[in-house]
Length: 587
Image (cartoon, rainbow, N blue to C red):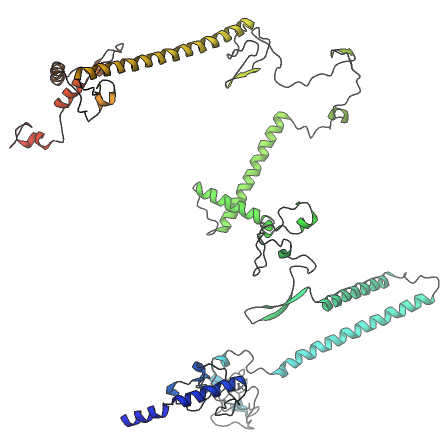
């Protein structure tokens, strides 16, 4: 085995010079300077084929160059067009044979397998009309394609009968048309020879024949022109269950119209999808919508709101709203139910709107149902002559009456000279004569206006005085606090600024106490006594305070310290009832 491997290696080994000569030969073949290499069948090999395609696998043992390894090597023989023979007779006996079918006399089947109708007198008894033996054909082995070939076993001669029938029908039609044309020409010639009858006159049948012939000729001419042009039709392959069929469909766009993508050549304009030939947005939104060019195409999105699209959207919206209100309705799961409910909803809505309309007409009447008013009244023109002076008073004629409403107008009550609603201020309505905002109040006239102005001025003065008092109080507190801080700094001798615990309520009620707070021992002892009294006797409960008592008690820092010292801490484990201690005995 080692010797065989060494021999194979030595045979496959090529020197550097041999490889160089092979590369030069390949370059010459590619350049056309050397003849192409031949395979074992004598065919030329393309020198531009890559090496990975030209090299055969090692397990094929293909020593000669070629592309045979690229072809299918396990192909079977092609299936023939064999099919079951029809109507073939083999042998027909003249007398009944033993073992044959008792009904028809054939030897290829028995009586129970006979397909001929049962004879009144069988062939076994009469020995006459012996049927011919059937051809027993071997089983035909068909492959995948042969079993599914729809035309396997098809005899083209069978279709000849169909062709002959149609040819006879066409010949008969041509003969009838020729006879009709000859009759029409004969009648026309007779009309021309008679001078008193015009050429275009005749009986109804002749006129109808001429009209029919003219219409037929026009239709034929139009069809011929369309076939000659051919640009309005395209051939399309249509898939069907029985196979493909070629049909002619009309193109969607006339070629003389401007294409969608040529209406606006700006790159940032509406996007055109070449695959679906759609442009959803309007390519010319800046143009006048009423212009002829803009009306031709305004984007494919315009067609989304046409036809039955709006009705379908309303149906979906109704189904969604009904489902939100608790009804078991779903547009996709039960579309028929959703459409039926929507139909019932529209009927009820129309009925309800009709009832509402009838009620309104019954209450206010229908002006459209009565006779129309005169044109002069509608246009505000009359025949009455009215003459005015410079002051606007009527000198001659009668002044036009003002239109009256169903509400009472210009009714002055409670001594008012203006109606209610003639004055408005700060979101309130009132009387303009006295500026009173109270409806049905008595009018005070000019005195009421003066009183209102005086009240407004007094209110402004009170507000200004209050602001001045608050400013003075604030200024005095700041000066007092500065003097107190200066005195405390001089008493300590260091000028250190101390914090007053009574200035900020947050220091009194807060949890953390500042370090510089000073407590009075006497006040602290008094506060502790009061806390003990509250704990033993229930203290001064605010819920037991009198109704009219409104005094407030200032809380000092000593009171807060006494509260912190005397309060119970429930979260303290040493203060628990079962701890074996009163909370102050430490082990």
